[in-house]
Image (cartoon, rainbow, N blue to C red):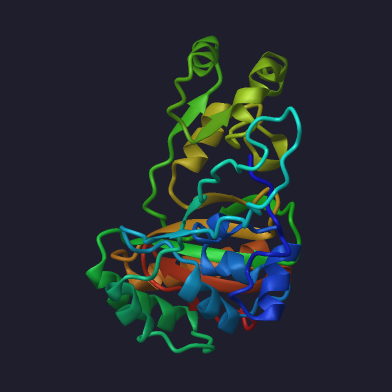
Length: 299
C-alpha cells in the first residue's frame, strides 16, 4: 500500500483549500465520490471552494483521462563496489499511474448555470427548480443532504406524506439468522425483540458494518416487531443518522415526480424533526443534478 505524502498533494489548489483537505485526511480518490455538501462539511471549505475543487477533482464523465506521476530521478554515476555486481546500474523504475479526476459533463454544466451560486432558495423554490433540472435526467430521486454540527445524531422522522420508497423489512428468526450467515441479506431494516439480542451477537460482525444491527435507539429492537414493521411500511416514517465519521445526514425523500407541495412539506418536516439548531447547512438535489442550497432558518 502506497503511503500518502500529505505535504505533496493538492498543490494545484489554493493554500487554504489544500490545508483543509489535508487536515481532514481526504485523499484525491475520495473527493470524486463525495457530494458537494460533504465537501462543505469539512472545516475551512466554503461553497465557492467546492467549484475550485470540482474543476480539478471530479468523477461525473464516463471516461477519465489518466495522468502519470513523474518518476523519481535516480543517479546513474554510482561508484563501483567491489563484489557487488551491477553496482553502476540502476533498477528501472516504472512510473506510477493514477486515475486523474474526471470533469463534469456538458449536461451537468448546463444545469449548473440554472442555479445561482451563493443564493439560498426557499424549499418551495428549490423543489420547483429541481423539478425542471431533473427533467433531463433518468434518475429522479430527491436527496436531502444535511451538514450537522455534531456526529452521533440518529432518530426517526414522522412525515405527512409518503416518500415513495419501498422499505424491505425482516423480523429476526432462526431462518433469517441462517440466511445472514450464508450471505443472503435482502432487507434494509432488521427488527428484533430484546430476547433475540443474545442470538444476534454472533452476527454483529456481519450486520454492524452494514448498519443493519438492531438497536433500541433506532427503534429496531421492540417487544412488538410486527406492529413496528407496519409503522415503518406506512410510508411516512423515515429513520435518519449521521455518517459514522462525518457530521452529515443523507435522506432520500422520494421522486421529484411526486406532488411538489407534498415534497416541500416532507423536506420542511425532516429539517424540523432533526432540529434546525443542529444543522449548519442543507442541500437539495436529484441524482446527477447540481445541489441547491436551502434557506431553513425560518422553519
